[in-house]
Image (cartoon, rainbow, N blue to C red; front, side, top):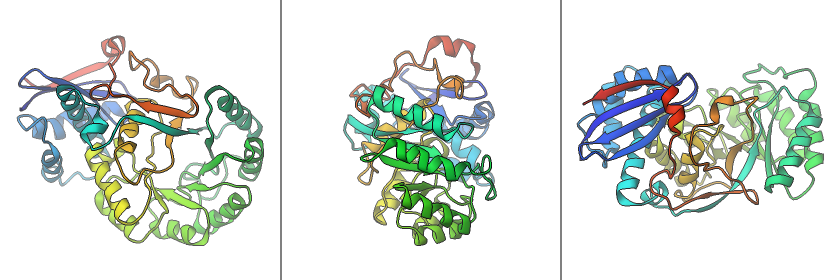
Length: 366
C-alpha cells in the first residue's frame, strides 16, 4: 500500500499532517510544535518527496532513507518534520487494523500515572504551591514538577533568590507521600548544579532535570555522579549519535527523549531500547497538550523501561493558548492522577474541523 498524498495544516505553533494511501485510507499526525509553519515547509521539501510512493505500513526504512537523502541537514528541523510522517502513518495503520497505536508497538491500552508539570518561572513560590494544591484536590495528582534557575541561565536565577525560595516552599506545601521533581532547563554549571542538587536532596526532591547545558554531557555526568537523586535529561537530543554518547557514558540516570523532537515514535522507541539495554528508565518529555502527550502515552504503554509517570502540562490558556481547540474529543482527562490510553484505533482522536479551516494548507502528491 503506497503513500500517494501528504497534506499539512498549520499555524506558527502547531502543524498537523494527513497521509493518504492509494486505497484512500488516511491517518493524522503532527510535526513538532513551535515554528511549526517552518517545519511544515521542511516537511514538503525534505520529507514528503522521499516518502511519496513508499510503503504506508512498513515505513521504518523510509525514515532511514530520508535521513540519508538529507544527510547534509541533520538535526532538529528535519527530525521535527519527520515526526509528522511517522505519526500519521501509525494512525493510518491503526485505523486499518482497528488497533490503538500502542498495540501496534507491542503495548496495551490502560492507565498511566501523571506528574503535573509547571512551565512557569514568572510565578512566586507561594502561588506555585497554591496551584499545585488545587490541582491535587481537583485531579488527584501525586507527583509535581516545577522550575528552578532560568532557562539557559548561565548560573543566574529567574530573579535573585527564587530557587532557594521555591524549592522549600513548594516541597513543604506538598508534604510527604508526593513525588517532587524540578527542571533546570540547562541553567547551571556543574559546580552550581551540585550546590542546587544538595538543596534538592535536603528538601525531598527526587528528580533534577537538565541541570547543565544539555549539550555539555560531561558537565551533566559530573552532577549525576555527585548526587544521590536522579539526574535526567535528553529532551533536546534528536540524533542517535548523541544518545549513544549520553547513554554510553551514563551522563543521566533517566533518559527523556521527546517524540516530536526525536523524529517520531519509531526513532523514540529505538532510544528507549538503548536505555533499556543500559538499565536506564525512560520518562519522555511532553510539554504541551497537542498530539505529543498522546503519542507519549501510547509510547509509555509499549516500552519495557517506562519510567514512573507521564509528564502532563498544567498550563492554561494564559500560557499556551494555542493548545486548545485542537481536537473534537479530549484525550486528556485526568482522574486520580492518571490518564488513560483507550482501545480506539490509531490515536483515537479527531482533529477539530474548525481549527483546520483556519490553518495554512499545503499538499504534496496527487
